[in-house]
Image (cartoon, rainbow, N blue to C red; front, side, top):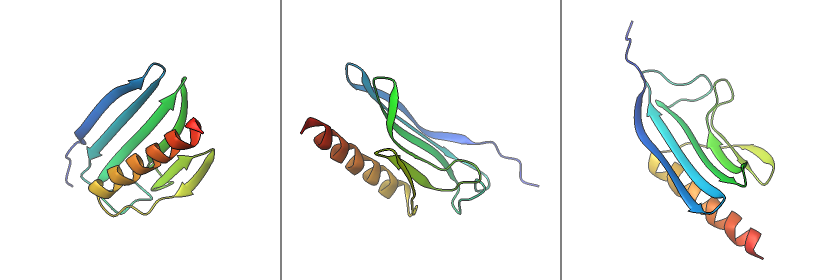
Length: 100
């Protein structure tokens, strides 16, 4: 049996403004998380006033999904590059929506 541990490949936490932050965590795994078909475990989150308002993750058993505007929807993972681009796009949409 192959027994390699998870390897952190991205671990960032950035304050965007007082009271809001982005946290990006991606690990490379030896085997997929149950519910996913790729070798990554991830949690990308945008938190405002201690409330997570946007999150992409692949929780064990649930597979790839996102939380946005109070709803959880499936997410089709294609690549890490696309995952980060989709998260950033939703982040900009949320910020524009809240500034109206």
